[in-house]
Length: 168
Image (tube, rainbow, N blue to C red; front, side):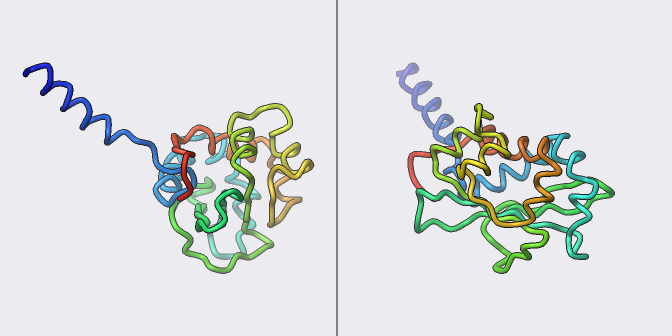
């Protein structure tokens, strides 16, 4: 009986450890936290990239899974915090209109998100954009100027634990 009780307790605990669905609002909140722990993103994008914000003090990155046709996009809001690029919001879309001079919309198939998340050969930012793995709207020249941090962002999509077995 004691072994059964321990097993039941372990199963209840394990149930709370399930990863969020990839690119769900919950996953985006976790991605926002992970962004703020990544020095390459926080400091690497804190200069000119962050200053190009249309005077709003923030930039918006919206992302989604091309394989999940009816699923909503998720959003990260990146704000200027004393010269650092801090994620101040991750979740469901709050900004229904993007400014294509400063904001980003990115999407890919699940297969390509996995490749980019691993940082596999040909799946870095330049390769992903050039081969069409990553569909991208926004200031492309600006993104090309921050390839190191941009690679870190793509790899972040693979570092944040997620369940890819269903669409959000």
